[in-house]
Length: 407
Ligand SMILES: *[C@@H]1O[C@H](CO)[C@@H](O)[C@H](O)[C@H]1NC(C)=O
Ligand SMILES: *[C@@H]1O[C@H](CO)[C@@H](O)[C@H](O)[C@H]1NC(C)=O
Ligand SMILES: *[C@@H]1O[C@H](CO)[C@@H](O)[C@H](O)[C@H]1NC(C)=O
Ligand SMILES: *[C@@H]1O[C@H](CO)[C@@H](O)[C@H](O)[C@H]1NC(C)=O
Image (cartoon, rainbow, N blue to C red; front, side, top):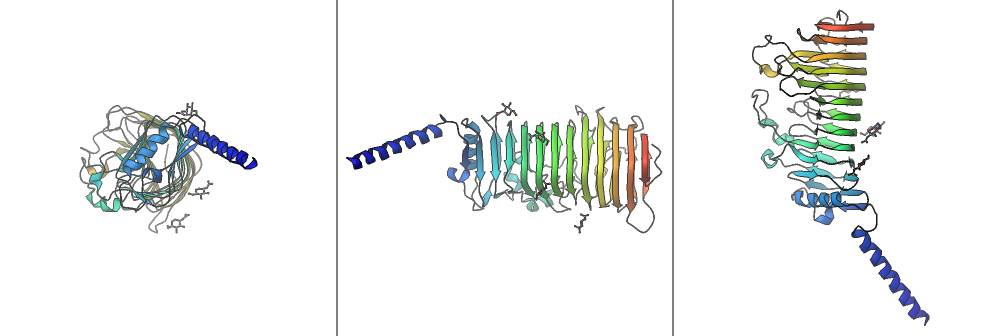
């Protein structure tokens, strides 16, 4: 009697759990769910293409409405030809990369702008501390952009387009073919604890590239690469950058601007508490001399920045002309208006004498440029650092070394 009762209760308990687990996989019961790419057949053997398997895991996670969903990539090297992760998704979604995602060596395999793309997603978190390996070494020699203005573009490691209220927290990106992280039309996005690495002589390997985006924070990132550590393109507003370690690289650059019509203003940039070490440029704003768009660059603050052996620590260049690729240098004058830019507490060493150089437009002189507490020392032995300012209006406070700019 007692044993029959026991069997019955064990059985009913079994059916009870069966019912509960069925209910939760069918989404009737709320619940957070992990979509492990291994369950979709992905293999971290460094060889087999996992694009289809990881995309399936994403699609299921994206459609999960029972609670928060997580795509999980475990340790291992997952070869990935190219992927696009599209939304909109039904809930908050986390993409955890603990292992390595490895790109094709052959750049022709990637037929989209970014090797890994996220599009039309809200409330996304990319995290896990894993690695994106762009395998750029095999394609850098194909890059002729320094000679050919219509050069072919190669893939960026990871791109975010039309993504809102999202973040990357903890990710490494190495050896991109042509740029590491790209943001286009992104809103309310935070980038923290990201490490970007490529050789100082790898061509066009921008670290973080941002355009047409607003309300972004970049905090505590380390970038060593062959082009701009951070490139800020037209239409970027309200971008807050702090605790960046940049070098080697080309510094934090705004622009190039003014070359194309329909460009939009760049407004509201702060760069604070950062260090540039061994970079070609530090804080740079560049606009083409021959500009077809009359946009403005305004409301910037650069505060507490250390320069260690930087070639050109502070630069405004409104006669920008890369690799001599523009017609009639000196003939045109930029139509980009630079206004309300503050530099406070910028200090350290410059490897060229041109520590402070502001060449503004003759027709649209820079307005309200404020310099305070600048101390930049030329590290060479053949003279002192120099300051050059042309068509700059504004004010000077505190000690300015090198002196000599009448703004
Ligand atoms: C994303 O989060 C916001 C609030 O931060 C919420 O209003 C919105 O509905 C969320 N979207 C999705 C797809 O969960
Ligand atoms: C980004 O960080 C800011 C400041 O810490 C915070 O207010 C905001 O909610 C964050 N946004 C996202 C999407 O994480
Ligand atoms: C900055 O990021 C590094 C990892 O890249 C981490 O170890 C460190 O704790 C972070 N610091 C802060 C203050 O968040
Ligand atoms: C600058 O970089 C050099 C070479 O990598 C390194 O030895 C030095 O410690 C760095 N300086 C600072 C202040 O980070």
